[in-house]
Image (cartoon, rainbow, N blue to C red; front, side, top):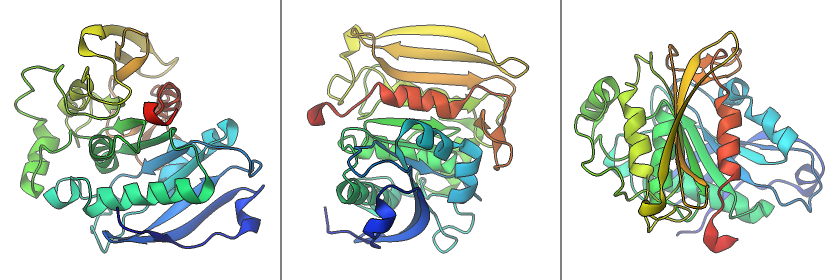
Length: 311
């Protein structure tokens, strides 16, 4: 990987005080701004890092408000980085998950985000085995790409209302995928190239991104014996349960677990919910406060996973 450069953060800002400010990051693949949240913990604290990728028409501030992730970070002691897509690179602020040049390791937006992640881990001594990525819609699609392309960087992935990696190759195929889902499912759902465990959320009343995509994101994540953190396919068992939020939506949760009882992937289908972050703060865009709390459930799932070679 090429050298990276980020704007410096002074020692007075980096120690013992809360930080949520905008910075710029540049590497060989390009430049993006980002906002970093660090809770006011002693500098000796080794914190996990969560990368949060906003959806189209959103900003880091909007996404942080809607997901309440900074509140969780303050409570639980981890850092959150929100890379920002600009109108210069996409007029609707969407991550360009549908372009082949932005779907692979070593180039494009995945490379920018991964190198930004590694730069922050190095500069702030975040826990390298406890780095995670999650996103909504276009951000969820980019999170799925990062989980596949950089399984040595991200220990687990959260995809909310997203699409599977590598199915779309241009804008036309992206629109078809969003409207109809992948038309042909993998013949064997337990043969996979995914490199990171994944938790998936999707509303079954989503008219922006077809809920069929949720199954396709979840299914390829199962049982690849060569993937870090996943159990051998023969050890995987699946469970399905239903539940309801008091006064809110019902949901179906499907989970895959290894022989050690560790979750390897989860799929949450939120019934009668649309294209929105489940359980989110209504002050943010694209949120549904009546669903199960996607932020809390993703953090629970992430806590069960670390990069094995770094433990």
